[in-house]
Length: 236
Image (cartoon, rainbow, N blue to C red):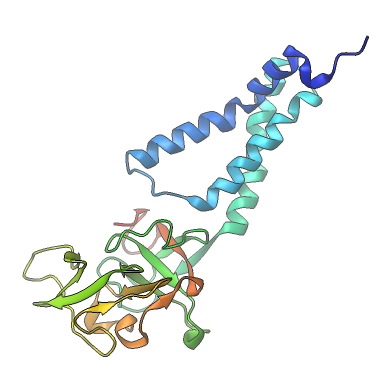
């Protein structure tokens, strides 16, 4: 008699061993994100799911426990490398519009799957913008307003629905926001529109000049500083 492979209990236990490495890595990443050591990384999700899927097929080639765990771990290297190559890119900061947070020469990792509609935290996220009017000059700015919010400036500070989103500090040395064109009291952001501001407002070309930005013009979210004058680490 023939026993269907998928019904063989040994096959499922072998599959569990092969999938142990990606599952353990997934749990570890979730804990690091939960503790805020790592930012949310949606660009890695396709690679992790692909890793789990390919690892689940390993028992078709071998049932030896050592081979299962080893292959399950090894498969993650090319899968995650491909994911990084397709869903992330590196950018170098030029100019002073985001100082002191980002300085000229800083190299940043950009998650191309990072959409402001999914991880919108006004005042806490930095994005790369690919505007039609700036095709050869991508911009990097801080998200300060999301769809449906009302923006208003009082005493040089920017508020979204009554909550201050810029600057983060109460220090007297903190930058102050000037109106400049599109930012008017009571500005209401339409659906699928986002408002961006440079951390150095006096030296920044941002939504105060070119108005709110549609989601399709947001290239990705800056998640990590790899090198540069500001050092290595997660972006503040």
